[in-house]
Picture (cartoon, rainbow, N blue to C red):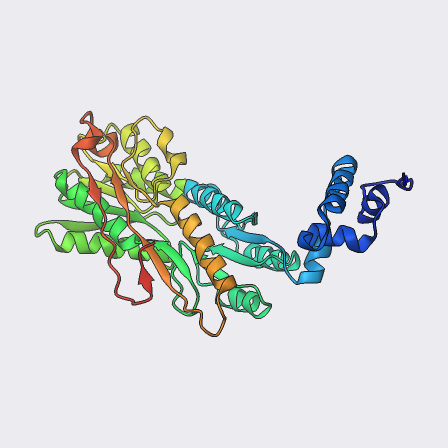
Length: 366
């Protein structure tokens, strides 16, 4: 029996070859082209791999092939459960196709996002999913020039021809506002910030569309300064100080964290939610669900976005580049009514489902 050489550190392909009594080329064929090796020899090599605990060097394979069976995912923040859900959906879909998922969070920092993209390129990942809040055109074009396809997630590009999957944010703003109107609100306070962010701008468009369809309903813009909870705290305090005949009688936070902070401030001022002012969020962030009043919101279908994004990326990897047609998949939204607008009524009393409306022929349902 051939004894493996002494070694320090992890086992290598040479140790496997020595243990199995075969050449390096035979071990390579067992790992990469098992059909070229006789069954008995292949079994001997696999037994040696198991005995030694050998793990193939993915970096070496990447250098040889030009890429790995891995997908990069860069999200803007993991503090929002939308992106956690997205991550889970993408990971399950990638794993089903025998791809690994490499994850990074930029925390809304464009330089950090650029650094993450560069790092993922260096790992020779097959392609990248980018859940960004901005177009990031220069970063994306650089990544694609280097041979890595990019699929946008939760953002529909307008300056880059690329695949994307998004939730219909306009419809999300529309159904949340329509729900407040159904609950009797006539002055809708829209607590928001950062109109330069695509989801914010599109949700506002939906708010305005719902108000336009209901004569006698008006909009009260409340600038929160930022989309983080401190902005909601300040906005809630300002709403509470307004004269009763001027302040909103229904409030929509463009994010759940803003809405939850508003609820806290209103209650601290002795204003009842929802009896005096019903309040809704708009992005179904589970981090905001732990308050004293469960928050009505709109689902973002993060897991579905992650799954569809992986499907789009793998299709682009396998398509002929000359024939590949980029497309945008638009997911609908669901209203999830809770006590912040319904009081003690059963949540099933009010339900709404968003239709998917596509004007771009490239846009489609999953």
